[in-house]
Image (tube, rainbow over all chains, first blue to last red; front, side, top):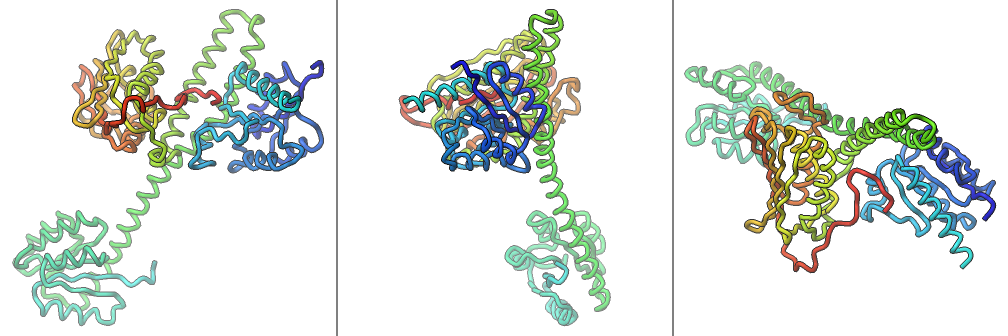
Length: 137
Length: 384
């Protein structure tokens, strides 16, 4: 437990990402990239304990594509993802006919932008703890 | 579009007129149909959708003027031209006032007839194009709102996110005054974000599919949620919100959307109340309906504004102009209410208050089957 956990932030708005990073920096080692391609490369190179992913990047939902790719990848499948989205309802467009919270997979959580610092830290900690518990169990 | 054959309908009780017109139009490249009475012509217009209609004003039975009026209400983009005899020039002028594009006095030469058809078809193209442009403008206005909202939302979220961090980091470093200023900035940004969210919800979200996921909802739940959300502003203005809700009144619907719909109306009631005013929110059952009424003792709505308050982007002209708003809320409320199979009407006594009445079909399910809406926040995000 002495080692700080590592969090990767993928968001195409550098200012927003910086605001997220400053909060997470207080407790984690963070890295930040601004497009899904760099995000994917970062995940291949290093291990991260949590991914904070903006799903509405680029022209549409490039972040969603990235989330799906991660779920198909053997090495990354179990990594918890904190989905950060502009507006909760946007999810409804991407996943028509499903609940507003799609619950991509049980290891995912969703928050709306902007996110209160305490809420962000709480969600991040919970996701990482749950992921560790799964691995130990 | 340019190569399309055009459809011309001729309505005249005189066979000789129809025959000669048909002869003139034989090689025109247009499709021509004839009718020898107003009723027959109107029936033909209904099924055949002509571009251009010639109507004789003087016919037995249904008069040309009646046919003209019916045609106008059927499809205002159809161009009508009236045939007139010498004695009916005055009537021709009247017909043009009713909406005829032009008149052609009898007798006319083939060239006069062809020239009139050319002009009529040009007019038809213009009218159709104008209608298309109008539709396009409407669509653009809606998309524009959605695009602008998106573009506004991202920077606002970025500013807010950094304000959160900065405020947190500076707590204990800066003075209490400075901290309060930061917090006020954050509050204002939050208000702006909530406004943009309402825009986005109003324009980029198709409300109709909501109906597929309707569940029994006790009306008391969205009423309570909406009142709670409006309470901050009410407390600030010392406005008292009183609720009288039939605890068993239920509808089939979407709790979140109903909350949003009610919040817009209750929020308005608070907004347009004077300091120390009172807003009464009641929900009752009546004739198979759940009737929600929101009445205030505020400034009221001028009669001139009343018919248009549910139009998107409409801001009252005559009311108190210093009050902020986007003109979205009531339009959105109406869309939500209508998606629930309900209706909303407003009445007002300017200077003394307004009343909004929403009627929704009541849901007659056993009380045990009624549940509150899913825990969905309206204005503030929280991971579910």
